[in-house]
Amino acid sequence: MTVPLGWFIAVSAVLFFIGTAGVLVRRNAVVILMSVELMLNATNLALVAFSRRYSSIDERGSVFVVFIFVVAAAEVAVGLAIVLSAYRNKPTVDVDEIRQLKG
Amino acid sequence: MFDVIEPALFAMLTIAIVAAGAGVVLANRITTSALLMAFTFLSVAGMFLLLGAETVAMFQVLIYVGAITVLILYGVMFTPQSPRLYGLFFQTQKWWAALFVIPIAAFVAAAAFAFRDSATIGAKGGDLMPLATSVFRDYAFPFEVASVLLLAAMVGAIVLVKRDED
Image 1: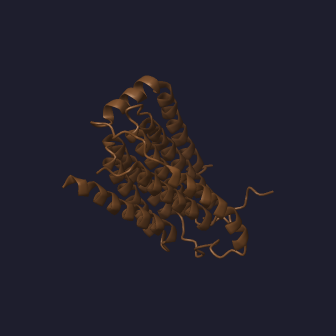
Image 2 (image 1 turned 120 degrees about the vertical axis):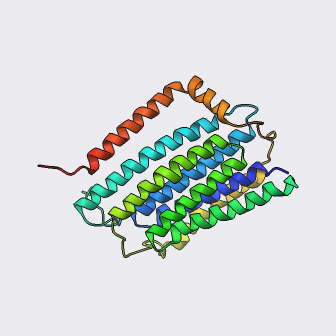
Image 3 (image 1 turned 90 degrees about the vertical axis):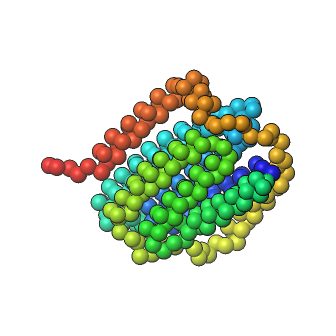
């Protein structure tokens, strides 16, 4: 038997929830970036699952997964650069302490 | 015999994804978080293989497990560990949180249980041909825009991190 589509979507939802919890709970900027990557991976899983199971109609979900890869790579590069330059201005990566942008 | 293998693999990958993902959020040491994140990415690549999307699984291993994990590890290397771990774990607004979370969770659960899998059985053969056809025929322009985005991100990251010499 093949695994039903809903199970993949359930795993995707759980992983997305874990990533959201990480973004909300952790204060370290690098861990927050990791949690964002987990959320992106969860959406990739949902997109690939739908795309493969409905591929008799269309297979375009996988294309969006490829674009998400590109955007995730750009996001993590720029995000880490921002974290590093903020760390250079003030020696902390705690997002509660980084408040230079506040008026 | 193959009837058992696929659900068994799915169960193992699910346990790996959920456990490692929770470990990313809960681990005290940030290096542990980073390596568990790499393991989560690898397990998601296994899920892609289970779905028959070999090309996407290969991209996942190359980009996520290879590139992004290394970038994150560089970030770990350059930054200190903050002594404070879970800033927001014990909030005083539990009841407000429950008030907002319970309707959303009920809605999501209702939608999930109402979901019926009407999909046909998955595609035969790999996903390389349909993927390549889509990318280079229907999405050629977004593909080029994505390459410009990567270039801009690379230049931006270098400019942000570069020290001023003067």
